[in-house]
Image 1: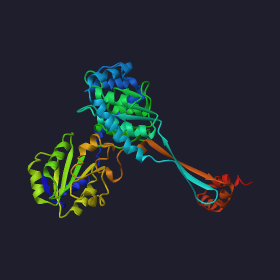
Image 2 (image 1 turned 90 degrees about the vertical axis):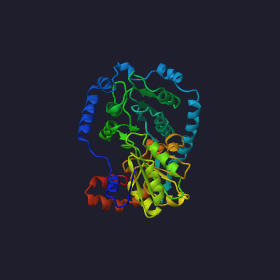
Image 3 (image 1 turned 180 degrees about the vertical axis):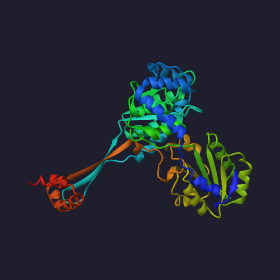
Image 4 (image 1 turned 30 degrees about the horizontal axis):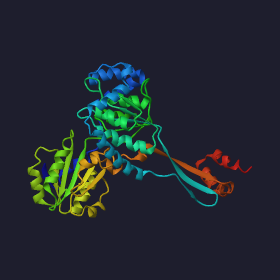
Length: 408
């Protein structure tokens, strides 16, 4: 990691690191989606052979109850007890985030409000390429369950033998996921979005994936809702001369375990910068040397990172100035790893600077709002004059006639 100053042009590239279009990937994904829309399961089987090297029959797309039961024989003995602790942490967090229906009187005879309705069907993509992300199962399924989603389907690419990782299957089973399918890539996203004979279409698709999965989510958005388009993982650390360099180095090294993971240290301490630089050669990222911690926060806000660690003595003082970050980790004993696995909030977070306008996955992401409007006869009569004026401006005569009909 090289040391740079805030005016370095390389920092501008980080600020503007948003998603770039790849026409080759776009066209490949577009063709895959069209094939799945036209040929359904046959297209899924074709692409599973091509990309995963596995020949399946149509009946094998859905993971059987026998295979799920057998998965318990291939996990460590304490996995289930560990999972129960994590589930309670996640439930504790997301129960607090739920909103209740509300009503309010806005004048005589006028009642307004909102209802919160869970989505009917949700599809969740669980990657299993470089590493089977069993943690992504509970980090996506539990918020949906707490929101009240009725049907949850998981898709995940099979291994070279045609199997789904047993830890993924066990977590899904313990969380009472309704359906699990052995299909991945853009073809799996298309199946969830448009449906096939075997895989019913869903209302929303969530979960991280590679560039083809992300592009497929982008292309099917509109036919189905999505959580976000996720890119490689990111970490920004704000630290000063009181911060433990060994904690910083350990967290940076953990970050680059992910493919294309990016780590940045922002500090006003020259000695800390030099110490960390000496131990982080060949790491994808920079050490940014600022004049003070306020400037460090300002730079972090411009970066809008997925993960932000504040490793100073009084992190809450700096927290007040943080505007853009997916998840914020306060103090030396709150590493990103705790958020990745067991703390409670989902690790599905905005990347590529989209924390400026996106949030981490929430139970509310699996709900929709219905506006409630109730007028009495007298309240509607009092509203006739302003209604008439606005309808006349827009030239929508029948709108006003629909109101007048109630008084003729």
